[in-house]
Length: 227
Image (cartoon, rainbow, N blue to C red; front, top):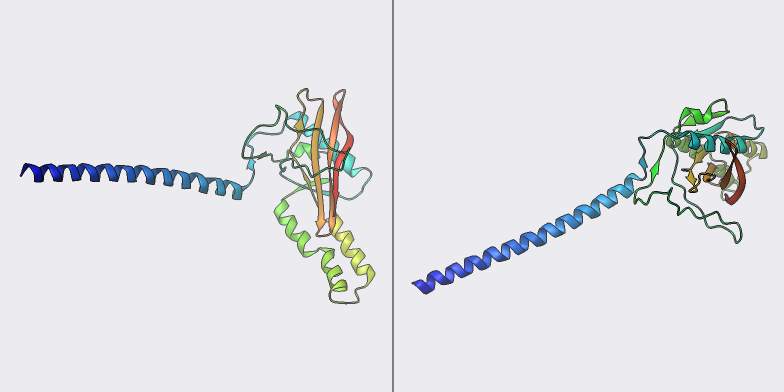
């Protein structure tokens, strides 16, 4: 009788131990899966929009870039109302930008972007726009559609129609600014811009800016791309 009780007692302890081990294993699996799904969700959501306003220095840098790009143009520029992370394309030999791994760049897995302040466009021929809405407009009016009709469909599309479509595409193009990256002394800054007006229409650059007195000026283009 004692042997039977003892046997049952030992078996019960064994079951409890096995169940506890199983619970611990399940907890680890659930935690790992939760972290994995959270990472996927964060990647899907993209950059985090900062709740902080732009600093005066950031505004000054953005205005310097816009003024340099606009030059004497009479057209109004469509500027995305939010920035993008500074992603630098591969540079040709001898034309690379300074490294951005400075104390000014937060080491975070989720990049942070900002909503542009209206002060950035004050007295400039620039409209702040919703980038997603304009991207749809660019897609439907892309002059590459006509070019494909000419090349693939062998259609006889008048040159004026293509020229007009290209002009409209440029007029409706989207200009996007990246986040500003300063050096430690805040005497230099890197900013990337992208101007997209279609599948085969667009260009962009990474500007290195210098602070001259109290003003920021574009010093040089250290990287660029063309479509």
